[in-house]
Image 1: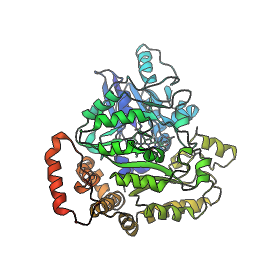
Image 2 (image 1 turned 30 degrees about the horizontal axis):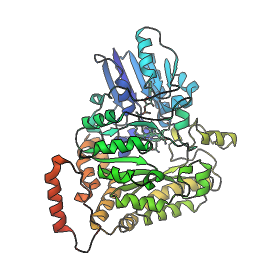
Image 3 (image 1 turned 180 degrees about the horizontal axis):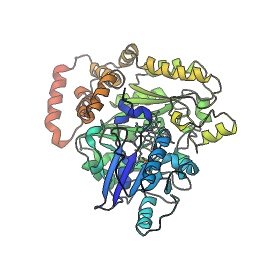
Image 4 (image 1 turned 90 degrees about the vertical axis):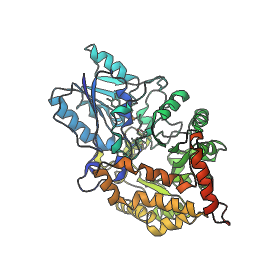
Length: 486
Ligand code: B12
C-alpha cells in the first residue's frame, strides 16, 4: 500500500523570506507514532511541510494528515487536493477533534482524540473494505503497548532537535485555556508509557541530547522517579516541561538534574493570583515562583518561562512588569503568548457565551494575534505590548542583566549564549535551515546546555571527559567563586 503522511505548515513556516528556527526544531512525532501501525512492506512517505516542500504530484492510496488549528486551512486544501486525485484521506489531530463538522467536509474518515487505538482499528476496517466515517477514542486509552515509533521515516538532518521524545500523554491538571479537555474527551486525559519501553526508546536515540515534549514530564511522580533512575549513567543532556509545583517538591528535580536535565519549560503564565484562579490554574496559586527558579538554577537547570498576556486581570502595566520580573529572576528564555481561546476549551466557551470572540479565522489563532475582546486593555495595546515584551526581554541589556543574577562566569556565559542564540542570530538560523544543516548545530546547543563544561553529563563511558572537566575546573575556577558546579 502507498501511504502519504503529512504535517502541514502554517504560512509563516514556509516563508521564502525568513524561516524562524522554532519550525525546524522537532520532527512530527505524532505521525511517526501512527506509522508504526502500518505494515512493514507498506510504502510510506512522511513529509513535514515545516522543513520541506511537499511533493504533490504523487499517487498515494491512503493519505493521513495531522491538523493543528493554525494549519487547518492548509490541511483542508491538501486533503481536497488528494481526494481529487482519488486517494482516501484521513484527517486527525487536535483541531479535527475540536471541530469535527468542519473537518468532515474535507475527509473520507476523521479521527477524534489520540490515534493510538483508533488508527489500527481503522486500518483493519480499511483493509477489509469497510472503513467508518468517524473513529473516536474513548475510555481507557493508553500507550503501554504501542509499537516503537517509526523514526526511520524522520529526516533527521532537517531538525535541530531530532531526538524529541514523548513518554506520556496529557497532563493531570485542568487549566481552562489548555487543549487537553478538547482533545481527550470521554476518557483518560493523562497516562504514561511503561518505564522500560520509555528507557528502550531513549537508548535507541543516537547522540546525547534529548527533548521531552511531554506536557508535564513530572506529572506522574512515580513514573518520573523510575525514569530518572533508569536514565542515570546514560550520559544524556535533556530538556523538558514541568510545573512550578513539581519543581518545588523536594527530590524529583534534583534527580532529574543528576541524570542530565539542563533546561525546563515552566508554565508560569501570569504573576496575578486573580488570573490563576480565573484560568483554573490552581496548582500555581500561592507558589513561590522565585523559589522555583532558584531551585532550578541551583541544580544547573535553565528556565524557559512561559507567560500569557491578556487574561481578564491584566491591565496595560502587565507587559513591563512581567519582563522586569523575568529579567530580575534570571530566567534565561521566555515565551510570551497572547491568550488564545482554542475551540473546545473552557476558555472558548466562556468567550463565546460572553460574545467576545472577534472571528474564527484559524490562521490567526497563533497566540500572536488578538482574537477576542480583552477586558482591561484594547486589542491594539495587547498586540503592541506582546511584541514589546519580546523586544525588551531579548534586548542585550536585559540578557546581560539576567545573566548577572548569577555569580559564576560560566553560568553567565551560558545564559548569554542560550538566550542570545535563540533570538539574536536569526539570520544565521535562517541560513542553516535553508542549507538543510539544522542538525549540525546540535553540538553547539549541547555545549551551551552543559555550560561549557560546568554541567557535563556523566556516564561510566565518559569518565575520561569527567576527569578532563575536573582538571579544567581546577585550573579555570576563580578561587573566590563557589558557584562553579561540577
Ligand atoms: C512540539 C509542538 C510544536 C512544535 C512542532 C510540532 C510538531 N512537529 O509536531 C512547534 C514548536 C513547531 C510548534 C509550533 C506551534 N504550536 Co505547538 N505544540 C507542540 C507540542 C508541545 C507537542 C506535539 C507532539 O509532538 N505531541 C506528541 C504526539 C505523539 O502527539 P500528537 O502530535 O498530538 O499526535 C497524536 C494525536 O494528535 C493523533 N493524531 C494526530 N494527527 C492525526 C491524524 C490521524 C489521521 C489520526 C488517526 C490521528 C492523529 O494521534 C497521534 C498519536 O496519538 C503540543 C502540545 C501537545 N501535547 O500536543 C503543542 C501544540 C500542538 N501547539 C500548539 C500551538 C498553538 C502551536 C503554535 C500556533 C504556537 C505558536 N504561537 O507558535 C505553533 C504553530 C504550529 C503549526 N505548525 O501550525 C497547540 C495546538 C492547539 C490546537 N488546537 O491546534 C498545542 C496543543 C499546545 C497548546 N498551546 O495547547 N508546536
